[in-house]
Image 1 (cartoon, rainbow, N blue to C red):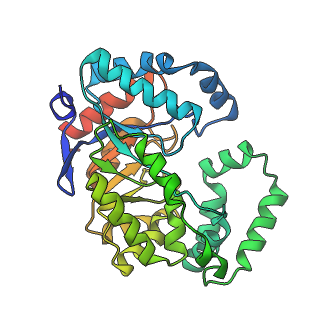
Image 2 (cartoon, one colour):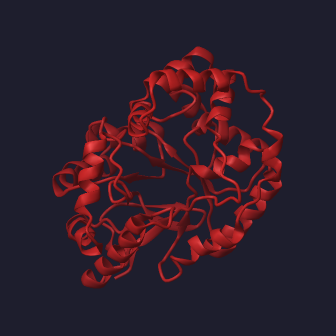
Image 3 (cartoon, rainbow, N blue to C red):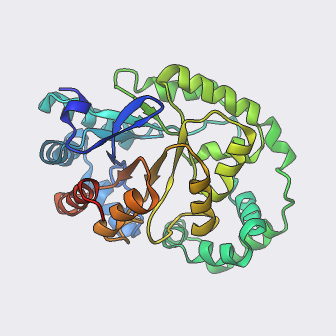
Length: 335
């Protein structure tokens, strides 16, 4: 059975491609929960191989009709387990699962753009951004995960605040590793990929103002998959830059949730950018890393904001019951 016929959720259309409005995310299949290091570790220990993931995927597909899944953006041990689990789930249930594929933007030189994003955000939103960024619970989770101390955060802020507003000149010479990108995409050549939605590493080309190269890559991806959505955690900055540059993306993938978590530079600026674009939005983090009740989460993203689709992370069947039943209710009833 095809993924369209098998879906028990309404379909939406993005650039001529139909996709269910509920997409199974990669968290916590990648060992990330956005709640605590201890919970992350429990999931990493739980995923002993593809079958351990099938044991969760299969009933989600079978009982709730979720027939679309995010594809891992990276090439890791867990990503290969996840890919094989998707394959096995499809074989065992005789049903297709559509892949909303993402990938890293592989580069010949690894650069951290977080300080520059901080600088641009500070220029745009001032103290409100500083307050939002520092208090964001997922940011706090990452600080703890990486053992970043308060003094190190203060030092990062001071360094970022001192940066010029123009992108660093050395960013112009950083090369995209096209061979590596091709390898990441080729991993999924036997799957049905109706939607390509990049992960946030693609922000780099926007921040570096390398719009010609970004357009070439967008064209390359669209020739292969038919669609290209740009992923960003800084919708308020990145979306206006892409729109102003006239890059022919088909939409955006970005955090949207009622708590404003990971919506930068502030939820207000992020929502203003979403409302200004006429292009489709796939929401990520609708539950705010487990901090927004599912009933509120889906009413907000679908009825108040009007996103086309959303990705949801599910770690067990209890979460599946709460999350997917709330999604079904929101999608079949007006608020």
